[in-house]
Image (cartoon, rainbow, N blue to C red; front, side):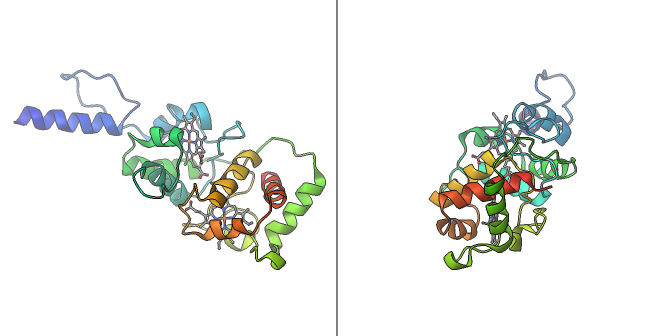
Length: 215
Ligand code: HEC
Ligand code: HEC
């Protein structure tokens, strides 16, 4: 009975510590992986160890609000909710072995890293200028609220609920705006969905471009 209990405990530890794999049954139980170890292990290939992804389709996590990151990880894991909160086969498999405690620690870890904003050059000044007007003033005629009212005038977000946007890769932002629009991302209490149904494709591109240039 004691052995079974020990085995179950060991399994739980291994599951919550994917980095500290490879242990034999008579070795001492591995210490749970720290957030830094998880981040520089499995996550680093796509987001970089410090969360400053240089791949435009993968979000920059460095400097993001801790509570928001933790919520996203939980949402990726909730694959059985209908409609899915955040439907991403890649990220759902990444979070499968993370415990709630790991997710909390990862949120704190990434929020403490210094952001290196998107270095992807945007050479269309008109597009950026249009995006700037939308971000700070919305489009009153079409009922589009100013992004700044929830994400802050500098794009630094308002914790716990509203994520930072400043310097995020335009390609990632554009993908998310489209996912909110179609309802394939449905973890926002319908707020972003309502905003997006009133925006044109050109407006989405403009605001995504402007956000990537915010510092
Ligand atoms: C194979 C590439 C890949 C790996 C490895 C990966 N991610 Fe991701 N991650 C992505 C992609 C792509 C998205 C965007 C998903 C979407 O919304 O469609 C994403 C999104 C996220 C988000 C949401 C960010 C936001 O702004 O909403 C968080 C948080 C995140 N990943 C954390 C992690 C953590 C923690 C790990 C390691 C346990 C990890 N990722 C491993 C590719 C990856
Ligand atoms: C009424 C408040 C509100 C307004 C106005 C608003 N947002 Fe949001 N936005 C949210 C909330 C809440 C979330 C987080 C949803 C979640 O928990 O995943 C969000 C998430 C996002 C995300 C996802 C960030 C990420 O890292 O994945 C993007 C991009 C975004 N908003 C862009 C915009 C843009 C662009 C505008 C203006 C056109 C805007 N938002 C206006 C409330 C708002």
